[in-house]
Image 1 (cartoon, helix red, strand yellow):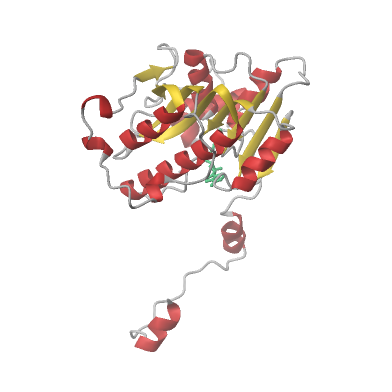
Image 2 (image 1 turned 30 degrees about the horizontal axis):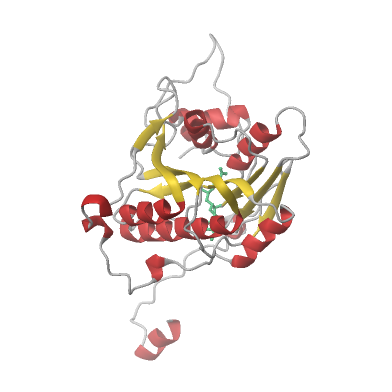
Length: 308
Ligand code: SAM
């Protein structure tokens, strides 16, 4: 695929670069805000799984406004390093670790956050059940860390895959938030099972002590939440969001070129700083990435064992 073909096919990818966003996902948070008014009264916000940083950019632009508001604090967490952003403190860390929660609280000088957002996604394997399971784990890790840092009545927004265990996830979220809505922004492709839970009014059960336990990992949990019936089954509202006149992420729009103008490629706003493919690219440039030739005879059993 040529470097310009994605520009031509994906309107949000193209717009993101034109408007200076690091990733097209910026539009998802903007459209969620349009529907849920997420940023009103927010002074402390946490962006979990933030790299390369387009959601942090949205938080920075929306919360800090034109004049740099000193009282606004934004913390961004990711396993990967991220290029700096104005008014955003970065933590390179793992959201499944309690030490990350403690570090966030230190940045807020002991004050809780008003808003936690999480666009976390594991590396997709292509095996749908595995991808859904890992995504669910990440969402619960985000929920756990949120219970350490969010203020009562605060808001939590997270990416969710609407797969097999989604009812279990809704049930978990409803324990902590009085309002849970599943929302699909226009900029999220219909062909993707991705959606976002918008959880409002954080109100944990009385006496709840934040911890990092995870019921999906607890195999003594043998209830099939999708089989629950009547009042035991939690069904949350589903809402498409983003102005209906906004671009449809599944369509291809023609380039709008002025008469006689040629198409100009726009480079990414922020190229990745340590991409995992960097070493492979260098090896290929140095011609060191050639595949080993397959052995003409099968390796002996001992060799097989050595390789595992
Ligand atoms: N919201 C980001 C933006 O707008 O630029 C995009 C986030 S990207 C889809 C998902 C991110 O989740 C990756 O950068 C990945 O490193 C991060 N991630 C996955 N597992 C994580 C974990 N356990 N702790 C912290 N970050 C994690």
